[in-house]
Length: 288
Image (tube, rainbow, N blue to C red; front, side, top):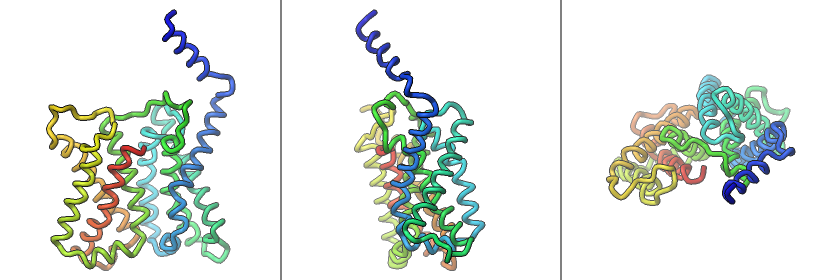
């Protein structure tokens, strides 16, 4: 047997050590999920605007947000879950676990910070927890990327085009969730001239393209020298910015930020929020 083969056999034997039972791996993954939920949701737990949203957000909009989050969490589990999965059933189970972790961590975090107590109505308390469980559950699923250890180095996750779009969606949603509740989005949009809105769109596309192509982040499909620059622009930058716009529109509408505004101010708010969302979408391909 060659030295390389012997090393591979020794590596396989070490990976299958008696201590690495399925139960232990799941518990370790669960601990990572709790840590991921903490990293993603902690800034939102300490934002007063999110506390008020728990009461002001329309219940049907919150229900729609949760309903849309479910299939997204399944896809995110497939791309970067907190443990290895095989098939749609495993991804669905892990998505449910991640949602439970995100919900529990949100309830615990808000209670510890004094933002969840007996003085709140049932609707307001449940609304706060359910709203903040969405980013928390995302963090729970992305814990594998955040707290990856050497023993998981062989855990190869899908890296195809669809997977990259899911990752960009996660990055856009994370930053949009953090910024949309603030009043600054509306303030910037009110003072934004139409020509500046176009410049902001161009800046968003430029920033995304810098991440996607110029910096050549690893995704298994790095363009070769013969590949024209517009190819990466059309395949990643344009779809990524479309995702950022769609996520910005969804989050602003869900939070009621566009209620009572005209079409032009609403579009400006979407463009303003899409700028950080697009950066998050592009940067997520490196971080996750």
